[in-house]
Image (tube, one colour):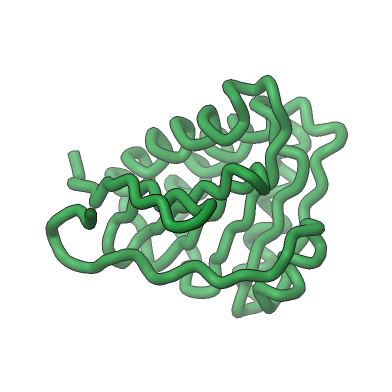
Length: 168
């Protein structure tokens, strides 16, 4: 099992939840019903499976176990093109799980056309294997555009603490 930096820091309405240095940072903004993920680097299957478990837990928290709708902001500007096995894990587990547990809108921030194409391909696959009838997906090059599309006020998240110890 890969160690995660896990903490609960409440600053205003933002609850920082977990991070894996150089791979992912996650925040829940309860009053906006927003789950924010910052994806980074290249993931092994072990990393993807560990992160999938954490993402599902956070989807349940922000979406009330599927009882209330939520929005997701995925910052993939530093996310590399992933292997087919990791992609399959992301599609069949995290994305479909979020759709089936209250996801209403998902905005992705990308920095390269290849990343945008990978997400569009994921969306086509997700539509086939999930109950996706009403979830809206959008790809953007800036955080400001993504937040506006989600209908949320613009704000920036602080980078998660770095190092081997949880913050707090």
